[in-house]
Image (cartoon, rainbow, N blue to C red):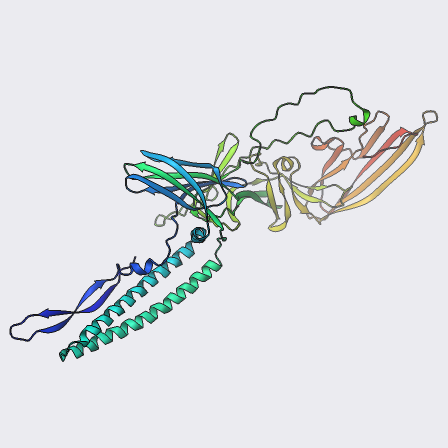
Length: 552
């Protein structure tokens, strides 16, 4: 609190044997810090705020650790105020440091005026402006007290007839005029500060709270210590997002992994340490027991019903390793080193925690806070892939040898040669098998030459029907350099012993059952600059003439 002093006239009685008794005007400094307390007391005290020591964010909820100091000794009750109304009360636990006895823990929900006091508690700008307004108000009250004091002194001087008091009265009037001018100036500053506070509160990121949670902890201690409060609160989460950048000339591929954090818990987290966890608290915590078959005879209609529900897919553990690529170059000898924002990670038996090195502020308005958690780069294998039976186009693809199952699935932003080409989904399994697609290449032309079906009979006695399908496509490279081209096609698969399928490919396919996909075939070849190549497939299907062919 600021201290203000008033120069005030004081009359003292001096006894002098040679001169008649008279009042002498003197000045002395009066500290007004005490009287200004009356002005401050008209403002309601804000609820006590505990410090946030750690926040661990999961999917859909967060685990929060707060602390309050124990000042003094003996028995006392600590109150953790202005907590989220979405606290899971069953998760509340208390930890005392040192030799502290902990008694009962009371959890209650407050509403109305108590919640209103907490509404802007976590907003740093609002708090600063509230303190500024309180200082101005204290200064104004001090000036008003000084004015009232001078007015009382003026009344005292009016009851004396001593000629010298006229000069003293004029001195008092001068000081009163100066104080009046000061009061007007402080009132203008107070009005401007109040307007600024109203604007901040109107545009504050803090949402209006209808209720808040308050936790009271009864303690007994022989020395100062502290108490920590742990709880879980819903309304918080984070998700990974990736940016992949491909240089088709140098074949350099880099992938940056970021975490997008948001929360609407009702608590404003300002300048706090944050840890992100890949575990999903909403997942099953116990395995399922096998189902025992109990056999019996039943009607034919019931046989058509599905026996068992499909088994649930098991979540894949996620681990992301932090890189050292954000440390920066070595600083000059005469300069302080730059702070490093490299995220450290720790694998705890399939659960990965990312600990952010910097403190962050996450307001409770759903605002998305983004931070880089990893980056990997390296040389990539490039090729173009076309599936002409589906789309007559060729797409850029790149392999990423540094991919690991540790990276959690998320959105993937794609950049080719510094141009944004679209968005995909980061999934380790599919990207490892198929590569990362980077959009259509307009310099590779795909043209359909043949696509025809012929129906006929084969044989005199067995009466077989035949279906012959021919497909031919031409690929032309308009680049000024050779490209690697991969062409995918699908062969019909027989699921009946009475259906016979014969396939002929020109040229011969490079891979049958591509990527363990039965019936899928692939050609791979280099296509020189300004040249074309044709691939052709002929499929002959024979089946009994008295049957119909089902192509599904």
